[in-house]
Length: 122
Ligand SMILES: [Zn+2]
Image (cartoon, protein in one colour):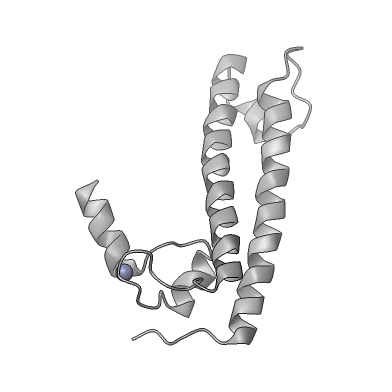
């Protein structure tokens, strides 16, 4: 059974979430600039420029953007849970999510068994 998180653990996860939030938010700005640039020139010489036609690259950026927006939302939610003291608990069964899982995905909402069930239902 996963153990309860200590104050020190919580602090660490909060820091991790803040860093992640900054990174994801930074990515969104970067991708927005990329996806919505209309002059046809890729501002950032990254891999997106190498995938072929411009329209494909544009679609690709927008797809990433969407996913990052969702991630950002989940990070915000997790930070709220740190504040109200429910961080680390499964939103479905209320058991502890487990540090290993939180390390891999600090914004995880559910424990692994609830997550698997949700995926099966989806
Ligand atoms: Zn659960």
